[in-house]
Length: 253
Image (cartoon, rainbow, N blue to C red; front, side, top):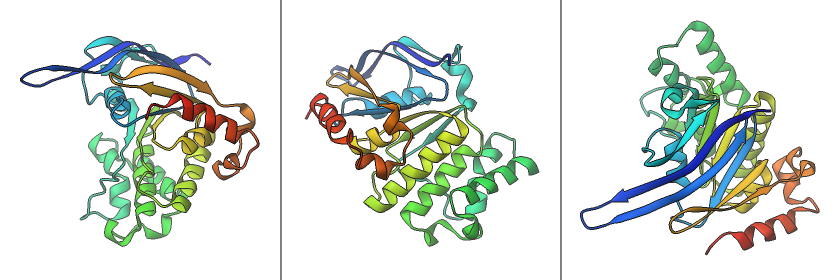
């Protein structure tokens, strides 16, 4: 597979009236098409900042990012972003929420809306299409948010701690769903998480950021024997403990 995402010498700064803060310094990595990268690191090391830059929400101050050989700025409609909060619109039904991205991009054709509704079925929520967000649990709402993002058929899927507010059973259920969708669609995916277990259970590779400023400390490859099994089974695998301990040692306190 060819390189799909390339990040080279990326540096990002914040300014206030008195000083400059370097949030990320000289970050470089590449990602093959269809792969799943998980980014971990201590609080404040720049994980979410990096994801926001990839989403086009923050500027690139130094370095460059390309998507499939094209500039990041030219690829915004090819990127889907799932946040920690689902951001569903309270006054719209679940069906109306899941087709929102189609409407914003001006592609809400009958065929595309049916694809969105099929995704709602795929995440197990086809039966609640006429409900409103307040009638759903947190886990159900996050599944709607995932379906809404996938409905626009992004080539690159970004997820910023989407399961962090969920209980462990819902978290593993959604990890399993995401891993299954990734396996089916072969969509290039980047996930940010604080959860090292989740990182091992989902990623093909785990990128560790160290701060401050955020720098690339290590990229850990996950063995094929773990990549191809469900997240719950990963946690019971014979290799899991050693991988967790290796990752634990790399992450700053």
